[in-house]
Amino acid sequence: MIYLPVECFIIQRLQEGGWRVVHRRADLTDLPIADFVSLRDAEEWVNWKSGPPRINPYVAANEMSSQPRLIEIAIEPKSKADEEKLGIALAKLADEDPAFEFSIDQEPRQTVLKGVSELHLDAILETIRRSHDVDLRVGAPQVAFLERITRPAEVEYTYKKQSGGSGQFAAVKLRVEPNELGKGYRFESKIVGSAVPKEYIPGIEKGIESVLCAGVVAGFPVIDIKVELIDGKYHDIDSSALAFEIATRAAFREALQKAGPLLFEPIMTVEVAIPEDCIGPVIGDLNLRRGQIRGQKRRSATVISAMVPLIDMFGYANDLRSMSQGRATFTMQFDHYAPAPSPENDPPFRPAIGMRA
Image 1 (cartoon, rainbow, N blue to C red):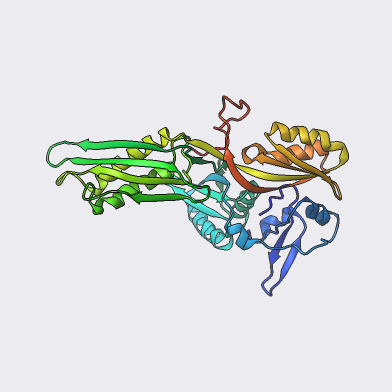
Image 2: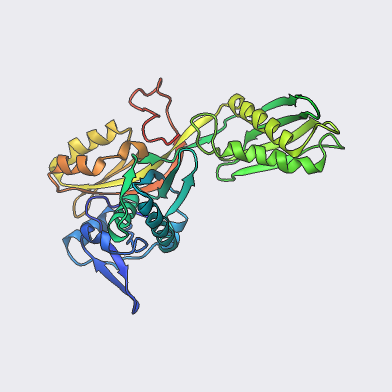
């Protein structure tokens, strides 16, 4: 999905079939959230602004459902009545919008909204407030970082607890290594014989998966990793699935720390359509945002292409409007994840900003 933060064009699905084009972002609050229009590049955006589109817009509903949820916002209802209305609103919005997700965190008690862009969640929040009459407290938008290891590691860990009566005992030896990019998580048991009975393997997998959800660098999900159970020990009386789960959690955390974990951040393809007299300030600003300029071409306006970390694009719509006196527009689309710099190597990068962990 393309992010059009300045003056978004959307389309509305009509009950009798077909679509109605709406030409102002202000109308967004009165329309179903699922009905975004997706434009291919900045040239199409310029064409839309200058008059009837030269090509037909297309709806990316299926495409949206597969887009990564790059932005999260924590919200809380202000009253018990708002809490009841919020539940109804979220269920309806999640059913209408394939790109929207939400979860409820028990500690602290809050609801986390997840979407493909800052604009996407702005629209969700506005609909909750206006169409469903819900008063909310809203946190700052957070970027969905990921964690990934860079080298293999092996760890042995023994969990032993005795407090009268039967105790708890479990020992595991794990090996972790990076999986191919995009291949996700894979677990394999290499146990030979009865070193670890099969009934304890689900507890081991549960322990691994609980750590995968919140890694060791900054509490973000761990991706693209192979985990092998290569050995272990058990006790006839004191061992249990829970004991192996506890032992595995500790062993897996230690293995991740030894395996060179890195924080990965979402990188966006950004295209800015600007007048000639704004080129210098806009390029300079993109450089300050850790952007890498990829090209510059002349169309209906000058279009600058760049790759920019999402965390550095917060507030860009207002800054661009100020630099261009309202004459520039931009599009932004997710491209890939890349290692985030450490604060020591890149002082302007502040990993605490834009993170939920």
